[in-house]
Length: 228
Image (cartoon, rainbow, N blue to C red; front, side, top):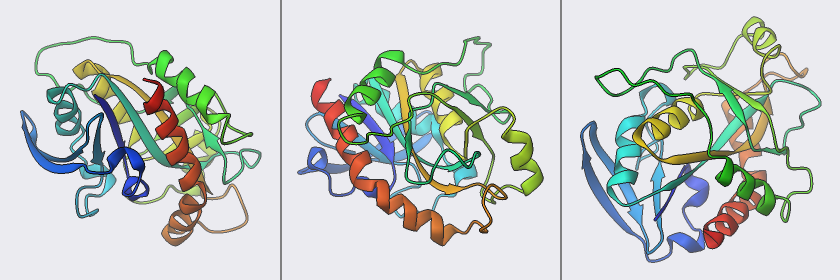
């Protein structure tokens, strides 16, 4: 089984046709999944899309994947660009991240070096080039806690060390790795972070631009699933 975690842009994809909605009991609480023959999908913001970034139950989501036989997890994320040359509408496959809010989930000490699945990352890049000529194959993701957007001063600091900013992916990646899953992310650059452009950031703009990349993201993820 293959896990996909993302938002509403996956509601009508082919790999979820004839899927069934199930509630999975985990050590960390209940999670709602959509289960098809090959894919388990989780909406990270919940079945009713009302879970804000700082309240997402990443451990429950990842354990739900594992309990259903998932090995590979693809995380689709919306991000803000920290650099004007990294254009809105681009797709980025990150190769590293910064997250100062991350903690381990297991009670006993467990040390690991955070990383993405390089196998899955390369597949996303390879398939991505068929749908997006300007796919960016490396980049650093900076996670903030959310749900508020960042101040201009915070963005200036982050831009010295990272390429994009978001509120979920790094914690998700660490949790997946700690539970024993192979994880990689595909990021839709849906806005310029606060102060990067002359325009103020708004939630409405983020939603509008995320729709522009939706077909490419769905096509890339579907192609990767077909090859696994």
